[in-house]
Length: 133
View (spheres, helix red, strand yellow):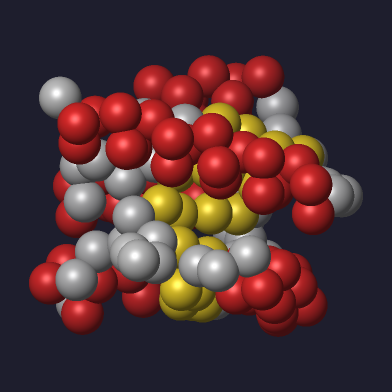
């Protein structure tokens, strides 16, 4: 049986560890990175099926461009890869920009395990539908 590969990009180690644990337990292969810049390289040759991406990164002076801008990068590396953004705070402007850049959905922190898994299952269901066509 195929195991979907999920990329988790978050600058908070605790969030990465938490997501890695619940996603691995749910049967997914998980790749964790601490910043979007690390997506390039090996993941272009073997792209993920889905990405969970934090909107805001520490050290980001304007409070949130990196994650949103990385949606475009992920979409270039793997065009069919749904990108679910996770955020502790997301302005309407950020949400609009994220969706224009191709984000699949936005989940607010703190989030529950059920919400994350439900959104991932929904996105994977849509991936499966596209492959059947």
